Length: 278
Image (cartoon, rainbow, N blue to C red; front, side):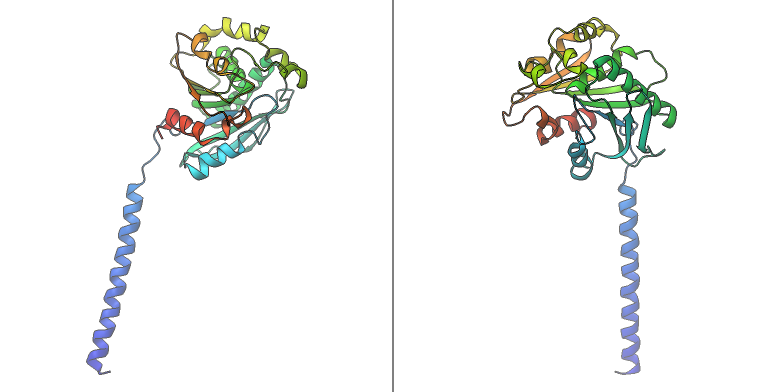
């Protein structure tokens, strides 16, 4: 190869290298510029409240789907409330989240009365407000967790030391009580009494319906295949909170059981649309 040919070859390699660097820089700038900061609503932590006999695993796979499959947010915090009302936690809410923070609340006594669970939920919410300065949240609840969340909202509507709940979803929540006739024969704990149709706890919840916070948007989801809570009970929130912004919907799929209501993409879709217009 002649000296002139070598020079042309070297310059060609150099030009290719320059173009490659320029392309990489352009692409990285383009990606960075396309990222949009979270809206105020997207920064609201979404709190997940389990039902009767619920555990850490109750919302585990739903949270994994929301995070890994749908990209709607990230689980960042677990709040564990002991029987004495004290609060422990694992994780933290970032001061400037890059995605919607998911928070899971777990009760040590998962068979406790409705009144106790509402108080424990209040303790968890006070922790969120005090520790992280959280001013606004959304709530997703399953079964009895929806009742505990409802009573909590009634009792704290004017409490300045808890976050304001903007949107509230109940999944298979027995607003008229558990309709499965054998439920109280195979289950134990104070919760079973409160979950009976026309129980004192439910009657009090009805009486305090006017205390639900103004401006709250609520969605209640029932399932045709739920053998524990029938669709009338799951959507009775529309009758209890007639003066509130309450939507109800039924998932018509007899394969989806009571425990499977938070394990289906059909419910995922309803949650995503109601919270984040996904």
